[in-house]
Image 1: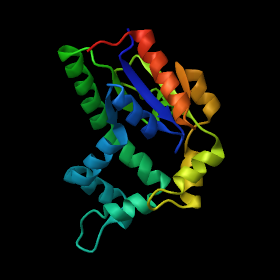
Image 2 (image 1 turned 120 degrees about the horizontal axis):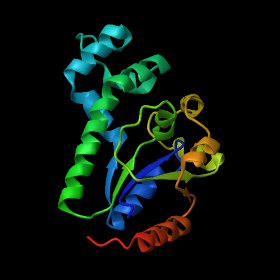
Image 3 (image 1 turned 90 degrees about the vertical axis):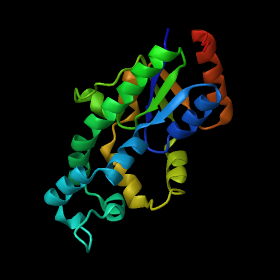
Image 4 (image 1 turned 180 degrees about the vertical axis):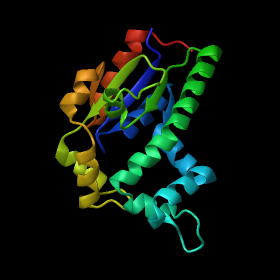
Length: 200
């Protein structure tokens, strides 16, 4: 039975919205980006390593300027931080999955935006059973992204250029969900739950 799902997809393709729906359907959900941001904001050792490598992100008191990093992080800085943080994130996610499996049969959904990118590089060590890829038209994704705080067209284009294509995501997908409206998402989730007969 499928109980641990990875939710992934392009920027603003509907991942977080799908997760919110899954939560209402009884899934335990986890946003990997939020875990990573929490580690970035609170782990002093990682902050010092970033400043040593990229002094531009040092604030006036010599500490880590997380606001500047979030707004203006270069591709090199992002790659460096991912290498530092994601092993910790993976460990936390896997511990959660193991603990939930021991205590209940509740289905779990992990939102991991760059899952396919990591998978193709051989860096995936997450415990999971199926991959759900969210999909929305480019113009819809761009419109959604522009509503985000600190988002610009240039930043959206830069993020998009670093991500893989939908065609590549679809190659690794067990499920593909159109996230352009409530009906398609609700239909998918009802079918998924019926298929697996979740009881918890």
